[in-house]
Structures are given as structure tokens and as C-alpha cells.
Image (cartoon, rainbow, N blue to C red):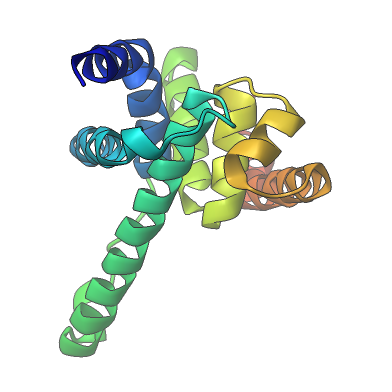
Length: 182
């Protein structure tokens, strides 16, 4: 038993930072990412005796993370439904005001602004699209690795990435057409 525990500890040391980084990209929140990472490894530890090694350990851990994130998103959606039915709509006015685009901003600030908008646009993508973008663009996985990690076909990965790019273009179009982010 001690050998399996030592093996699992090595697994944690090997993958913890990478799983955390993916969780952070999926959630956009450090605390949520830390919580998801911890729960991923708790679940993995509980299932460690049943892990057959048919998939790479990172792929297995990623799958656990994705499932936990889906649960988190469902819980958030249910909570928002309850809150929305209790909150008057006039309280939400002005909540998403954008800064004045005519303001003179230095190049570095423009780049930081664009990066923040891009991050938000990625977070606003439908979950399946966001997962593909994170794994491809940020984690550098191949289409096949993404397909394996997500349990979908390579064609589905290609399709989701194409649709994600389309969503991102639309989300950033007004910002870019206004002469920002050049």
C-alpha cells in the first residue's frame, strides 16, 4: 500500500502545477482553481486503486478536473437561477459598463486591456469550446490528445476550435474595429 501511496505522491508532484494552471484558465479565479485542483487530486486518490493506466495519468487527471468543473458550472447556474428570480432586474443596470474608448491609453495599457478582454472572451465561451481552446492554445496539446482527454473525436475537436475562434472573433470584433488592440 505504501508503494502505491508513494507512486501517487509522485503523480501529484508531477502534475499539480499543470492541473492548477488548466483549472485557473477554466475558472478565471485563483481560489476556484485551487479548490478544483485539490478536489481533483482527492478524487484521483480515491480512485487510484482502480486506475488501469489505459490513458496517460495527465489525461486521466484532466478528465477528473473537467467533470468537477462541469459540476461547478451546473451548481453556479442553479444558484444564479435562484438569485435571478429573487433579484429585481433594475439592480443589474450598468453592471457591465466599458471604459471610455476615446481615452488616450499607452501601448502597454492597450495590450493589457486586450489581454483582459481576450481572457474574458475565453471564459465566456461555452464550456466545451473553452476546454478545447485551453488545451490547444494554452496547454499545447495535439488534437488527438485533446480528443482523448475530453472523450470526443478529433473531428469534434476541430469543429469546437473553429466555433470557438468564431465566438472569439465576434466577442472582440467591436473592440478591434474601434481601432483598439492594434
